[in-house]
Length: 451
Image (cartoon, rainbow, N blue to C red; front, side, top):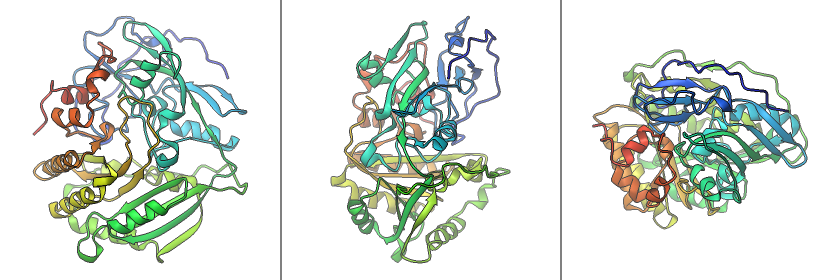
């Protein structure tokens, strides 16, 4: 495959852009980029800029009030693939879905994938995404070979572990603030089948979850945990693990129609009773204590992708995502404190997930994962309750020596962020002077927290 020439078209302004959590809501000019040569713009804007992809981060890390968002999804070309090594070069706006559609029929898979395939390669690198195999594969950035970075002054350079390594480390997990990525090379892993050999086991309580996690031997592990039920059902869940099937099997699959969540649910529909009913049904959908068998990779990795616009079920006010990691030495006590605070609040989440992170080091300077236990869940926005709850969970995280994930956050204070990421001042030296974000303004103390 080869890259085509520049179009020479002038960038046009596109409709409003919002994050997946739909909060906060900021106005900005959205300028689509179709070719690497479209940036820097012929007439640089007076406002700050920020590259954005498919907007699957939850808070304000992909937002910039009254700024210019550089939409990279038009830069979506696969440039080169080496079937002998699994090396894929593509533009930064290529989505993980595009890569899977290309690679799986050829016997390759993503080295690391999050819970949605609607993420661009640039976004995956900028947020240094992680997945169910973090304990063995680390983060996405570990599988990036090199990329091109373009600064707002027009300077371009290639970054890799040996070429401009300091910029390589700052950009991986750098939240899009170090410059615009135009292309990247990633290393794909071979597979012989679409199938995942799946095993699920029910557990009751945080101690059973810890025991299952520590005994697991699979490449992929994660657990769903019930954050609504109390009493004997407190912290019950399903521990899920899987491996790529070793027996050759089908690599192609016919396209199936997607469901679409058609409208914003009224806030009254999301209450403790409806979520409790959902959590009970989810727990009991697995009839026995254990279940095993082959499943297609899509429902295993991307269950929510089967419903387009599923964020609408949280209503027009949006949702807050909370994701943290606590070190192992304080993980049990910290998670119990967090789970008790959630059940006491009366709020609840549909699909809360909990997982062990491994000790595979991240290459990104600002990467989120550290060894320990991770929790991620969503809350509908009800300002009188949900803001106070997430703020409390952030304080508990800080008290137990953990940290929160920038890509999933809308509530961290500057003091909390700077405690979670004490290296932030070193990172600040790599931030492009022409770039900014709502998140960066908030955690550097230039924007007050919304109350």
